[in-house]
Length: 98
Image (cartoon, rainbow, N blue to C red; front, side):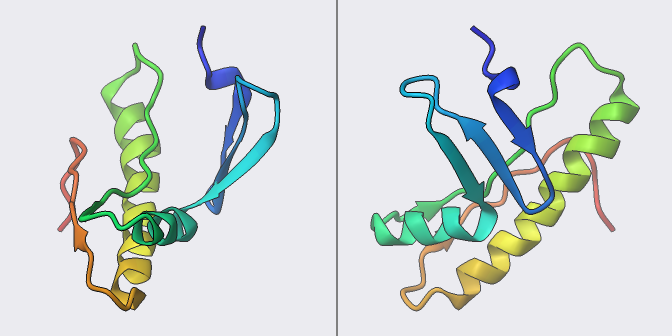
């Protein structure tokens, strides 16, 4: 079953309907970092948008990498504000930034 129909991706968050109980859940980038910190994570991961394939390379770069980079910046700021110094992992999508 594809879960794509159960979610809506926006700049501010991802909203999705649980495939288990149907509850609506909103995942904010900053909150995901906070939850990882509260769970005692040694390594934190940012949210990342996965583009449905097949897709043209230009569409992937324009849609996925750009949003993922903005989410990465917001995650970094949330990470830097964390008082306990968790470790960040920077995942690179195919596009390079200057």
